[in-house]
Length: 381
Image (tube, rainbow, N blue to C red; front, top):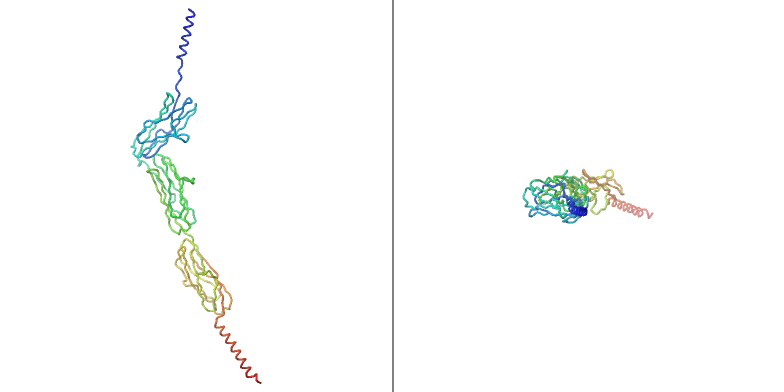
C-alpha cells in the first residue's frame, strides 16, 4: 500500500511539474512623443518612433490604414527598414515619414504602426489632421530692404523667413542680382546651404550677400529673393544704391607738360579733364596761377558735366608778362569741383621775341656800316 501511495505521489508530482508555470509573453511597445500632427496636402511629416521590449527580440514593422495615394517609409541607420532588433533593457529608434498627396481631403486620418515579434503585437495609432493649404502662410521680410554705398562695398541684407503653417517646410533659396554682380543667399551662420528647413510656426534668419561689379556706375540696382516649398512661396525685393566714386585726372593730349611762349604774347596749351570714377563730375572749374603779371585763362572756363569714363578737352591761354626775360617758368593748372581737385604743373620756356632779334641785327648792320664809312673817310689820311 505504501509503494502504491509513493507511486501516486510521484505521478502527481510529475503531472504538477508538466503543468506548472507557462513562460510569459515578451513585453513590446512602440511610442512617439507627438502622435497627432497637422499636415497640408502635398507635404510630408515625420515621426520619431521608439521600439522597446522586455527581452532581446527581432520586431517586424508595418503600417495599417494608409490611404490610397499616401506614401510611408521607415528608416534607421541611414537605410530604409522593415524591422529592428531590440536588446534587453534597450530600445531602437526608427524614423517614419508619411507623404500626403496634393489631392488629400481635409480631416483627420488615422495611420497605425504595427510591430510584431513572435506572437506578440504592439500598435501605435498616429492621427494626421489634413488641413487646407490656405490654413497657413509663409513670409519673407528684410530688416533693411535698401542699402547705399560706394561700388567697392560688400552689401549684406538680413531677412526673416517665417513658416506660419501647421507643418515643417523645407525651402529652396534663390537670389538674383544685376549682370556681373556676385549675389548669394544662405541661412545665417552657414555658407554653403542652398535650402533650409523651418519648423511649423517657426522662423529662420537668412542673409543675402551682394558684391557689385566694379564697373557699375552710380544708380539703384534691384535684387530679387525668393523661397519655395512645394506650393508655398514667398519673395522679397531688395535694392542697392551705388553712390559711385569720384576720381578726376588732369592731363594733356600728348602727356607733355612743357611749352614755349614769348614775353607779352599768348600761348595756347591744350588740357584734358578725365572722369576716371564711377560718378558723374559736375560743375568743373578751370583755373591757373603763374608768375607775377602773367595771365592765364581757359576756354571753356567751366564744364557742366563729365560722364564716368569720359573726358573733355579745354584750352589754356597762357600770356607771360611783357617784361619777362628769357628762361623757364612754372605755371599751375587746376580742375576742381565740390568733390574733387586735380592740378598739374607746366614748364613754360620764355623765348626772345623775333622782333628784338631783328632789331639786334639792324643795330649790328648799322654799327658795321658806320665803321666802314669811318674807315673810308679817314683811312686815306
